[in-house]
Image 1 (cartoon, rainbow, N blue to C red):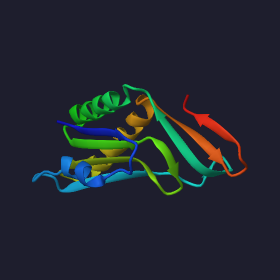
Image 2 (cartoon, rainbow, N blue to C red):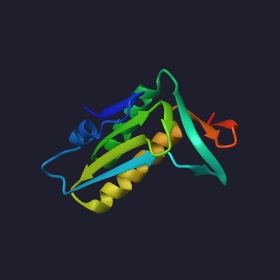
Image 3 (cartoon, rainbow, N blue to C red):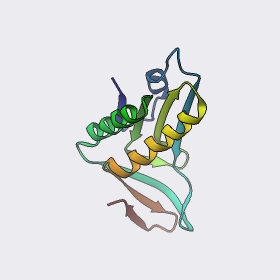
Image 4 (tube, rainbow, N blue to C red):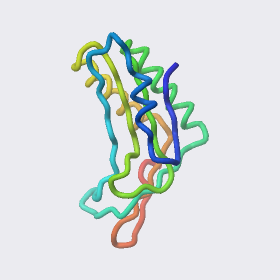
Length: 135
């Protein structure tokens, strides 16, 4: 079973890391998608993430597809709600026998999540303006 969750709480990495542990794995690659303080030359104050009701199901399907395509163990979590600078919005983990395939699969997983899972963010800028991204 693939671990995939959308949560409005800070992401707990332990269950995600445990989901990709294997005696045959010599490499575990993780990705922390962290809220940064800028975008396109504008200063970010905070973000709000919103998800479609089916987003967790689609996240799980995304993880299952990448696992099937690569033959590796994969897991991911995405946070929704209000996030501050430095908060983790996306955490992904992949394990494999060797580091190269783990790095490649983790990149594939993150790219696939960002392109298929219906989650949108509203950026709040330091100047008081806001804008939606990914609608």
